[in-house]
Amino acid sequence: MFRLWAKEFKNNHILKDTVIEDGSDDTRTHKVFHALEQVCYQFDLGQPIWLDATIQEFKRHDKARFTKDNFIEAIDFDYLEIHVIEED
Image (cartoon, rainbow, N blue to C red; front, top):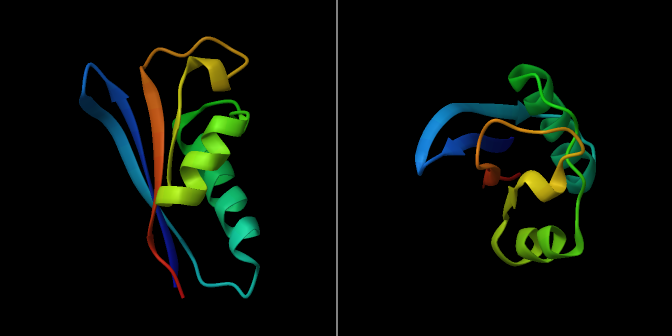
């Protein structure tokens, strides 16, 4: 089972969080993108842009932060953090 935990932060406090589970036979990359799409739908957000720094952080720590620089529209929180908490 693949599980991704997403948290929306403002002033170092969690505003929203959710865990997305994916039991499909898809690739890890597809599971991450699909889970992020579900998170954005649940939190009513536009899809963030994966900047080079975001990609490198995710590769190193299985965790990434999407700040206002990653979003096209204005956001009312400090950052969205995703973290892979379980993998097959």
